[in-house]
Image (cartoon, rainbow, N blue to C red):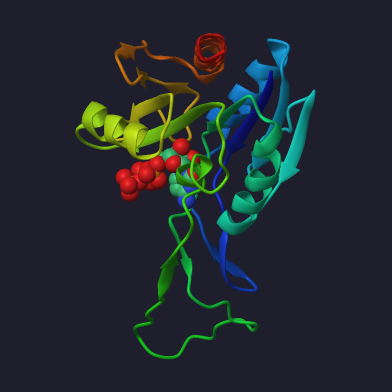
Length: 213
Ligand code: CTP
C-alpha cells in the first residue's frame, strides 16, 4: 500500500522571530511511519517541525505551517491507498504576519487569529479521496462520544482517540492509551508504547483496506 501520514505540530508565524505552536512531539506519527515501512508499505510522511530523527525508508516531506501541510497533503493524497492524519494542526493562525519584529509598547497586546483549513475534513470533499481514512482525536472529556462525532463529520473509516487529560500518556509521552472508533464498533487498546500501538494501527488499516477492496 501507499500510506500517507501527517505528523507533528505546525508553526504559525507571527513575525520573523515568533510563532504559535502546540505541545505535540510528533512521536505517534513517526512511529506510524516507521511501522508502515517495517510492514512493507511505501510511506509518505508529511511532517511539521519535530526533534525526531527522520524515519528511514519513507518519503519525507517537511512543512512548517498548516497551509503548507494542506498543500502537500492535497498533492500526495492522490496516490495514497490509506491516509493517517496524526498531525496536531493549529486550528488558527495570526491574521497578519509582521514583516519586522513586533516591539513591546503597551501593557496589553491583542493578536487576531483566523481559522486554518481542516486538512482531514477536506479529504473526502475537496481532495475527493476515496481510500482508507484515519483521523486522530485528542479529547479531555466524553472521549468516545466526541471522537465518534469526528469520525462521522470528517468521513473517516477509523478514529484513534486518546484522553489528553491523563498525565503520562499522549502528548510528548512515549506511551499512549487509545480507543479505536469504527463506524460500527469501538475497540479499547491497553496502555502501550507508541511503537507497539503504531503497529496495531497499521494492521487495523491493512484490514480496512482489504474490506474496502
Ligand atoms: N486536523 C487536520 N487539519 C486541521 C485540524 C485537524 O487535518 N486543521 C486533523 C488532525 O490531524 C486529527 C483530527 O483532524 O486527525 C483532529 O480533529 P479536530 O476536529 O481538529 O480535533 P480538535 O483539534 O480536538 O478539534 P475540536 O476543537 O473540534 O475538538
